[in-house]
Image (cartoon, rainbow, N blue to C red; front, top):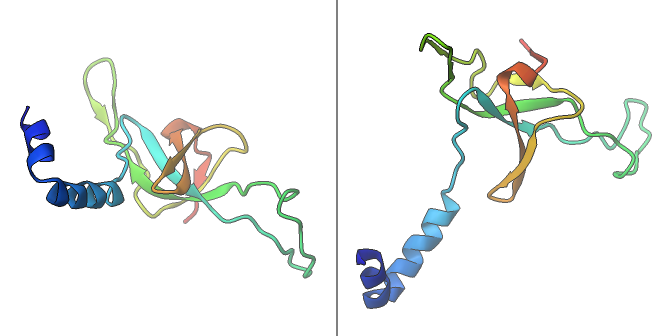
Length: 119
């Protein structure tokens, strides 16, 4: 009821509030899930040959954007993920859930699905 009342009584203030809230939206993964942004596709080889965008396959590298709190085992112990925000990781060729957050294309993986971490 209060939400409806605020929307009806002050439309100019609420429209600004909703716009700023939508711009600041973020995603917090649950459990042992990791949010990853894949690296940009290579469009030019080391020899200087320019590849068409539709034939270049997606890269298997990415950067960790967000990390879930971890997962509990049967006895109730919390297993915290070993990855941290900003880590460069090696991803499987297939898998992950493709999502869009604020127009950016990202992928959600379980920690077990990520192949490795670059040091």
